[in-house]
Image 1 (cartoon, rainbow, N blue to C red):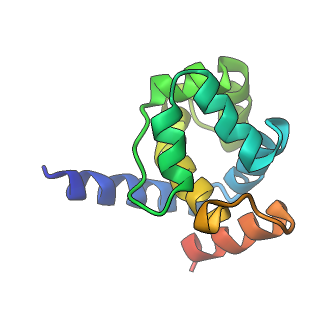
Image 2 (image 1 turned 90 degrees about the vertical axis):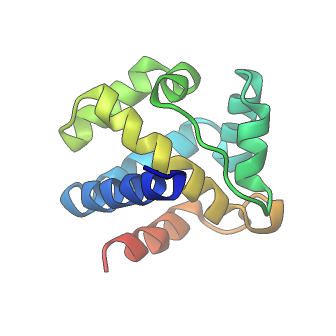
Length: 133
């Protein structure tokens, strides 16, 4: 399986998860808000040793991936467990799907490498509509 096929599979899983659990958007909003917005969240990744990964999400190039275990390390078990409970999945599966979703979300919320100036909640809702069509 090529990297492109792997990315397509992650995207399909993410779309399915959002369709079945639209509250995932609320969970992402909470993660972003709890970590000080997009810039605070990116800084958290940098502080935990994922500077190149987080910078790629903000930059104009390709988004670097992050593993589920690494995402748990950065966001914390409690944060992932809380989201998992909300969407009705186990924490490891939730972290796996989030590791595919979060780079796309941060990338879309930070056009041209800038933190969003408007309401992140409405931007996330708009972003969710792309998945739910």
